[in-house]
Image 1 (cartoon, rainbow, N blue to C red):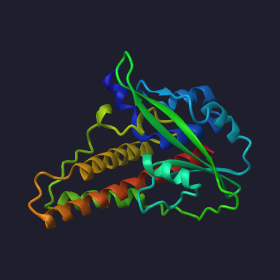
Image 2 (cartoon, rainbow, N blue to C red):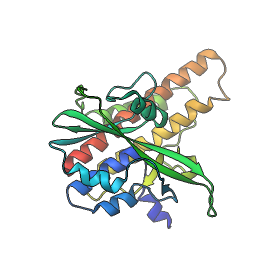
Image 3 (cartoon, rainbow, N blue to C red):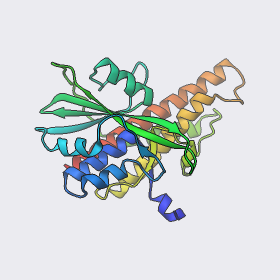
Image 4 (tube, helix red, strand yellow):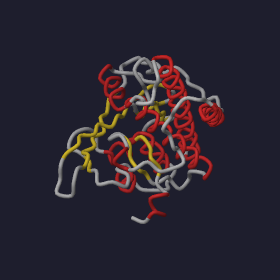
Length: 259
């Protein structure tokens, strides 16, 4: 694949990429077979033998009245938007993502990717199973209206972090190598209906989200003490949270635009 072709791919959570491409299918831009392939991204991953068949899942969406797709990127202690059952919440937290499907404003089910790394003659690949969790009977879905300001908030936090004296090893202007992405992420072709501005925002938010996650996990070898390390973590968490909100808001706007 050429450098130009790679540049057109976005690093995204698998659930985010599937949600946008599912919206493309619902608007008639692509068939379900194409969406199934696009859900794997540009790597060598394969669909596993467990979970739901994505082809069947996609076609079933057309039978859901007043369908709406919602992206959730949960963290421990931050599970707003998830509706259960407990196994769905546990699975979504494990990979930090889920697609919640609603029917006429009520939760219908949750879809969560589960990736198992395996060896192959072509090198390591991931087996991807999309796990389907029906919503508990009587479950409700609290409204989570978008503020419409997630982009501005992300830029403000990035500017504040650039002005700080805290040492950060973040270069969000450069693509992240595929082998440095979490297993639950892919390099995905953006859907045709995605605007150039939203594609750029997804590119920026995705990179910041991955980089801050890596930094928070690794820690800083340059921290001079507890106060310095805490200040660094605070800025990284602010960047992570702003990037999460920008990614969610942009994916949902793109999905709504396709409907």
